[in-house]
Image (tube, rainbow, N blue to C red):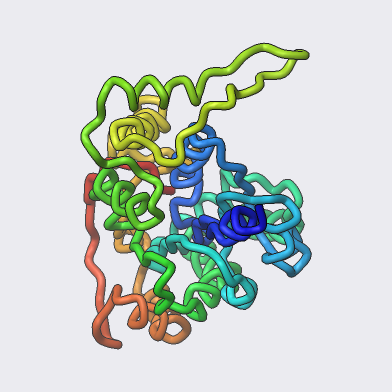
Length: 302
């Protein structure tokens, strides 16, 4: 008995570590469905107040199987001792553009007093000035990306741009790394057990899962979930690259900063965040330049 309990307690917590305006909504929508299918309890932690500055205790007390830490601050992650996860970064310049439109039009201000005042400022100024304000407003998020530990053996490092260009391959790699995907050839018995694990019965006005569970998600099911969450579906039929500035799924185009930054924005960014660009590999030299672009990509980012 003691041996079984010990084995149970050593099972690592799974985790997704993301950053503000880094396609976290898209990724979480996929992860939530996987957690439902596998019967994994999940929780979203948007800031340290959610877990009272003690991430390890929050996971233990709530018996979290899959943590979604969407504004990942390594100071709190460093306290974890038994976890396996993946971490996603995005070009910081696209974060600024995405943040400007989201904070100006679509992002919820619920429980975020700072955003209320920031939005009021953005509504009074031009887009050019607003982007400069956004560079200051998002400083905390960019600093958290800079101070992340990118050498953790139990964390798979990914770039959002690669994920949206190759979503199916990316999520298969993620779940292979987390060791919760069944990528063997499916058979009738596996499929039957899998769908039984998702079946629910009506009891006391609540849906209760049958006591049949799968520890790994079928690859075919994972690919289905990724497909359901494609950009054209989330944007209600809007074509790829077609912009709706009031939508959370605004455009879906990495590199969009080149269409919005002017020389003043470039100089400000170089003076404040060049070290981050170099650290993440989005630029290879200090004196980078920009030209407008109009890429077309398939998956939902804002």
